[in-house]
Image (cartoon, rainbow, N blue to C red; front, side, top):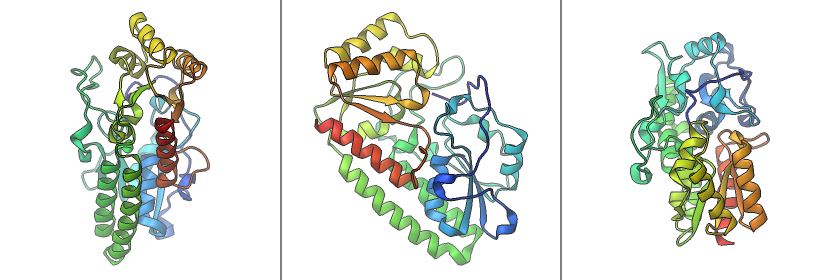
Length: 303
């Protein structure tokens, strides 16, 4: 689902608490970084450590990220940043539009994605969203590693005297990513999964599980449109008759349709794994968050 379809409401721009940051200030002497979401902000924080201050425009775990509308204050933050990082791929177009200077150092995650796991689901729809690719690349551990490496390069160019520190932090971060990859790789072989929304597509693909979610169901949920009756019936049958081993639920964009599917899955005894699009309150960073989600998915697949 893209952030392009901004509907109503605005989220408060607050500090990236999950990464232990405060509002960026040029007076701090630290490298000022602005991220579209606290997920990408936490990756930059892992690389930059105490040498960076990170501001995430989206870090409210109770809000729907797809309803975000940028404000003048956001543009000012981006303009003053030494480095900006965003998802791309149509997910956070509002952020790309805030970058008005070619001199701003930027990292866009989507072009760095690992192409091994792209679903082929059709041509761009009316609003330009291309369903032939999955833009939720923070669930692709390979892409996250590539973003960390890009961050080390960009931060090293900004502060050459800290380059060794950034490279060491990236190496440590990469080692832990590889441990997560080993934990999930192949764990879902011969297992079937359904998803209320294809957020964790890359992680499911890494597990080797087959995602059997009806295409029309996924598309409707992503586009915030009515789910066709046939697609809903197929989805309900999958969970009620336990034709899937796991149901993956995006809790951050829950609606009455997805809530009903989740209830049916639980009633049938199908394990439900909750995933989110931003770091939940209380987590310490990307690795902490993703580790918990990998553990939940692997345990459910083993059940």
